[in-house]
Image (cartoon, rainbow, N blue to C red; front, side, top):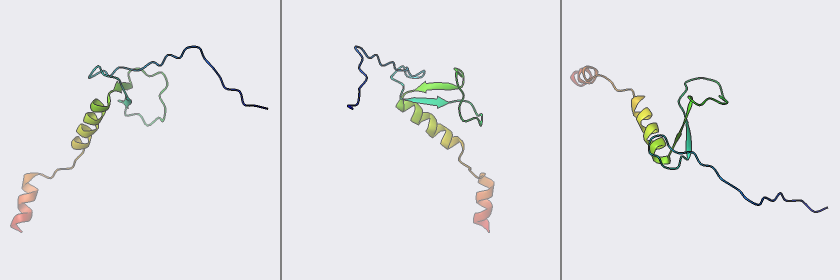
Length: 80
């Protein structure tokens, strides 16, 4: 028996728009700090972002999480 393929007369692909740049959004950034795996229907918990906006935000978060020692701690080590 031959396999049947679904056919359509028209296909409309809908894209999200980046909330920061206005470009095509390739990523869905999760703003919520919840531990739940999936948040269905949560409009305020996700933000559509373009590739550049997403990577810029990820870099900003990475820099924010870097543990930098105080200048006093570094100078004490040099004196010892």
